[in-house]
Length: 555
Image (cartoon, rainbow, N blue to C red; front, top):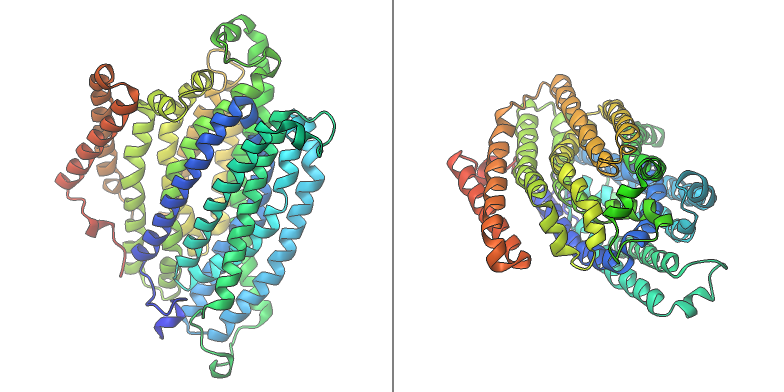
């Protein structure tokens, strides 16, 4: 096979670890840039403004998942299989068919957002001021569909650079446009409100301006991928030199949608956890506040506390804007190991190479656990210091979000470990299994919210507890299903060593922080404690025999 088939830049095909590292590096950079966007944004908007911002995402993410998330996986899997068989003609047709089909799907998704925005904000989320934020996010559905096709195509060819660079373009655009537009709306409210519907508040306008920056970032990423594909050869031989493909267009469509439908449904169900929080959080918080109004008034009695009438929106915005932002950081990075494993495991499955599947599966899970355990446990023990470092001017928001972040720490681990399991199940043709598993998890999430959030002593921390329970159940079921359906063995020692090392890391970090806080203050004591915990963790893993070689898949 020619190297160019897998290398859109005329490079050799990337191994599982190589591809994962490219995605991980790009994700790390984009997450740093994303933090530079989200942290100042939260400090600008506060709990109330982040309530509007989160409401937009509550409706956007399920539609995005249904129309976009499965596309990259479906296109990548089918492309990897055809490339492994050197069916070059089919590769061109996969790209063409996917672009036409999924652009139409993107238009439908955008239309759904536009139609559902007002009734959703008014009757489901009970947050009508978030309407503008939802509207300006709608075009991102169409743009995301186009970019997802190109990303899946090149990931299937096992070159991850287009995905990484397009994510970087998106992150930079979001940082510049999102913060710039939000700040302008806050500092020039009279100018901005002239062009908005009567009754729009300055905070709602600023939230919509920030969301507009997100839509513009999707446009930037899509434009980069289109220009790159037009200007740079993808490595596939020219049409006159291609052999006719034995696969018809109808068969390609069937193969695409056989993966897309269950993957998209599974991703939809996954994102329903956000929608469940939005649909039940405000209502259940109002119930808790009515049960103990004096307790809530005393808890948020300082000058930075919101108006009592907006208390539920403030608490929910603090939870989603502060705690959930930190919670999502680690899984979004470790998810790259699952995405990087898809082409390698799909190819090994097509070749019926059980040994290769075992090696790459173990490498993906160990690499994920290597990062997830110390990060998740560290977040739990240092939740309040982390929030104080990132949001020093938001004392009331920290008070609302810190208990939730402590409860979300273990959930970080379970969610991070679930991602590669789902990716590998999808790669070997068992995508419907992920839908059923996530359905069980979503039921746990819904039940937990309804039972725990109305309790005044727990309130929004109940959403965090139910999230952790949801992903614990999901992880255990996914681990059992993958081993049963593939015969791959992922023993307990694969998780026990990083778990033990993670506990040592968290204990060392917490102990160091308590010693250094009085002398250095939070801003210096926290980074020093994290470094101390990291050193203890790396030394413990070295003693237990975890080396870079053990994290590698096939080269």
